[in-house]
Amino acid sequence: MVAIGTMSYIGSHGAELLRAGWTEARIDPNVEEWARRIHAFSREVDSTELRRNRVRIEDKGAIVGFHWRGATDEDQARRAVEEIAQRAEQSGLTTHWGRKVLEVRPPVRIDKGAGITSFLEGANVGAALYVGDDATDLDAFQALGQLVEQGKLERAIRVGVSSEEGPSEITDEADLVVDGTAGVQNLLATLVAE
Image (tube, rainbow, N blue to C red; front, side):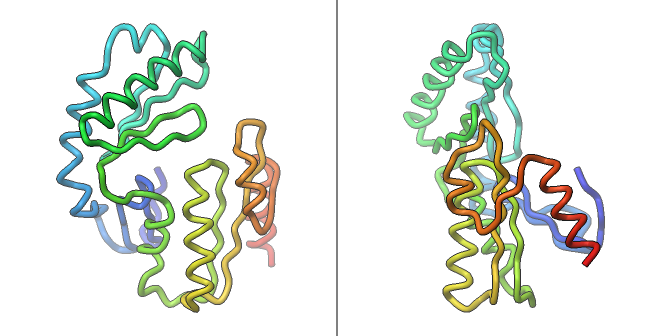
């Protein structure tokens, strides 16, 4: 969604990497072979009932998300998504829960902690700043702490974004807490001004 060729990016919770100057993102080979199975699974479970429950399917490459935020009956929609989770696990896939979303993933490690560790590997940096607002960001918070403990980073600043829907662990684990999107914008503006 952002296209600045002088920056490196990670996506799909660390499964995709786009280094500065590259023209295409590279998918982790361990993940790539599972992508077709994940997409086939999402087509199998996509149904009229799921759409009637206002469950939205999001293609995230090697991950497929099932969102029920904004469903007319969120409890009923969540029950439908819980059935999908059971089917996914019975099919040998991995499930990961976020805020009103189920992600169906390959049975290999894909999380923001593995992603940030891979992203920083070999980088000549002493400090890292990470901003997160969801349960999936806790893996990155933990990984950054480990990188500091291992001496691979001098400092890591883990910024938690508080919101009504966010898990309390985000603000509990954060080094700094900001309030919503506006708080993130103010933080970035302050950093740029320094």
